[in-house]
Amino acid sequence: MPVPGMENMIQGIELSSNGHAKSINMATLKYDTWHQESCDKISIHGFSIGNGQTIEFVETYTISMPNENTMILTQDNGYKQTYTRK
Image 1 (tube, helix red, strand yellow):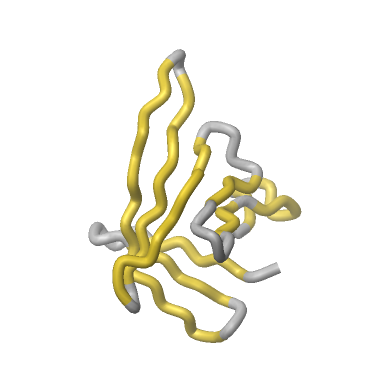
Image 2 (cartoon, one colour):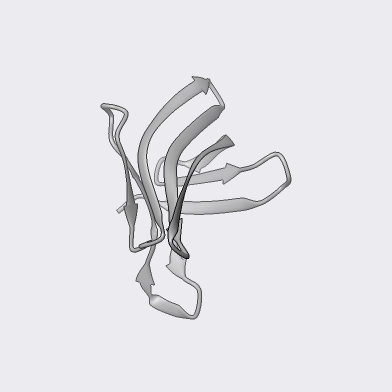
């Protein structure tokens, strides 16, 4: 997805088929693993790095794929992120 304020750059998450996850252009969010909980749920594990501390986190999303190149991840609070396959 575009970096807010810098639409010529992208940021996001690379999800590998082996369960590894990688941050793209997000220095303070380091994703490392992911797994699919059900046919429409995904959990992504990582670390938030900043202000002299590192905080471990797990984000859980509902997945929707309106087409083969677009994935929308929605958290329970309604926050949505739209990703496009490159």
